[in-house]
Length: 259
Image (cartoon, rainbow, N blue to C red; front, side):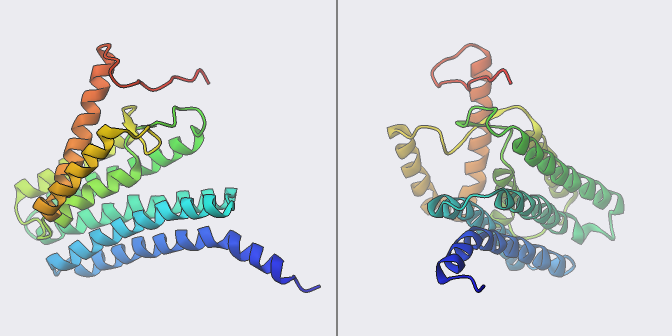
């Protein structure tokens, strides 16, 4: 028997979140293609475009969950597809982007440095995969107001913001070592137990004021704003965790589950 129009509509509704996830994968794959094609050319605009595509992938990544909740079509298949997409979009794609951006122009003069850069980018990718695996098995076992470790989407945006702000590829050893330090540091934060505030944290007047300040800084600093934002985001989070260890209770600390 042929399915009725209502059954076809129900199937299409369940496919919609997965389609949005595939759009996210398309952006991540596009970023990879642009990074590889531009590796030996070093065009700044192409590197910036590859980084912007990662941001767009993050937008679609947020939308697929919203669409699934809005249409009541959450499924285990969608969860698995989203997790696989996150590994590629926010692990492999930014790792490859930073490798091409930071080390492709140095391959002839400093081959050892290039290998170090490749290792640092792999550490970022590996930490991102471990972060996602830990998140998947800890769902429902941690305080939803906080992430355990930096989310992989924030980690990808953090490293991509450097390319958006300074799209000219690295040409000095100092710049290469800075990129190596960035990739290792962000990777370490992803697999750490540092608690990062999530979007489920209660919003108040302070959050609205911070949003207004961010909008003003974005207008003033433009592309450099994102580097400043993630620098302050990481520093403020680390200071908050240190304050909790010292007994400060000004902001509610994460609940600890025995399981």
